[in-house]
Image (cartoon, rainbow, N blue to C red):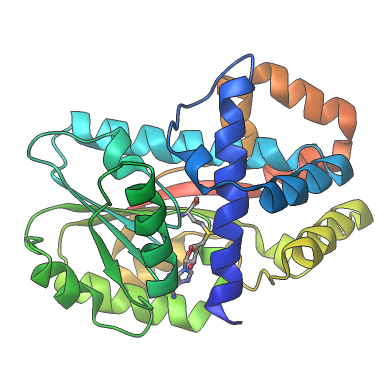
Length: 280
Ligand SMILES: C[S@@+](CC[C@H](N)C(=O)[O-])C[C@H]1O[C@@H](n2cnc3c(N)ncnc32)[C@H](O)[C@@H]1O
């Protein structure tokens, strides 16, 4: 798939992040998200919400999860944080901390647009590496950008893995792992059952089709067993949970609404998870 099509989804996510300020029970704060929203995107998101209201909840939980991982990382002394396939993620500003180096990685068109919007809004552009991270030697690029590859680096890989072919994911992790001995990587992922349409629940398949058609994207990779990362890359799953479990703890009101709207939506959230893998 053309990564430009995936890039377009970054706008939708930003729009959903911008809507958080109107939520009664806020899960996060992103004062920059609104800069990336325009009427056309707002309309697209409103249409999606009309068809499938829980789509916003999915994104809300995932944003909160990843933000918590960054917060905790910094509190525990992490000094290097990379947003892989960053889109309009603004955590580099939101969590700006003395002595902590941030970097966004995304395709040139996305980062150039992002910086133009930020400059126009009077915001300092985020440091970034413009590339297709599957095609370049990313560790080398990080080193050039001032990162210490021997020291711990936290990678936030949000909203990416489902779009990438499995072999490319493993090749990429191989390259990273070989050059960054203390890497930690957090990402969200679907169950293979969602991607392969084998949940046995026709309504989940319909939701999956609706998402893909609406965004013009395809979900190609899912995971059911994280032990593959330990076996192939020496990356241990130190944390993992479905977004349903996460939501039940952090946003019980919203989970109740999802269940009320549609059982299948709640089931989908059980098959959408996040994890943190750490070099062991
Ligand atoms: C769904 S968006 C998610 C953006 C952001 N992480 C978030 O959650 O808001 C996916 C982003 O990853 C970027 N991306 C996907 N594959 C990429 C690749 N191989 N190289 C560089 N960027 C990539 C896309 O350009 C897009 O901006």
